[in-house]
Amino acid sequence: MCLAIPSKVIKIDTKTNLATLDTLGVMREASLDLMNEEVRIGDYVLLHIGYVMGKIDEEQAKLSLETYAEIIKTLEEEEKELKEPH
Image (cartoon, rainbow, N blue to C red; front, side, top):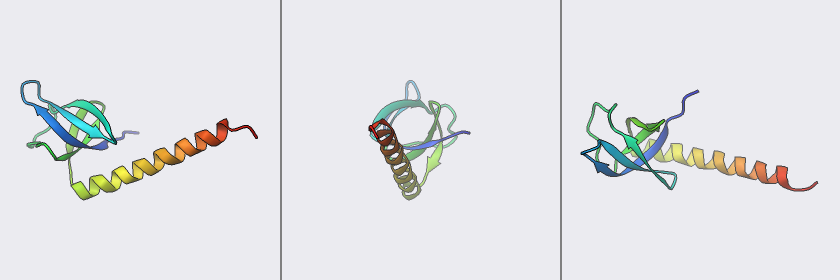
């Protein structure tokens, strides 16, 4: 299964063709080498294994990020329950 995570472009280094992305509050760099269209600061993009795969509409990105946040919260709650003594 492949998972592309919506991320917001914070910075672009044109010399290295790398973008700094904010992914759920985590900053990371990703290559823009696979992009055929221009990416600008403030754009939302899909991140997959270190590469920006495409642009995504801001509203759609925010909805996806909300879903990811809910999944993470649920997983954390389940993990906490498993660690609690019964």
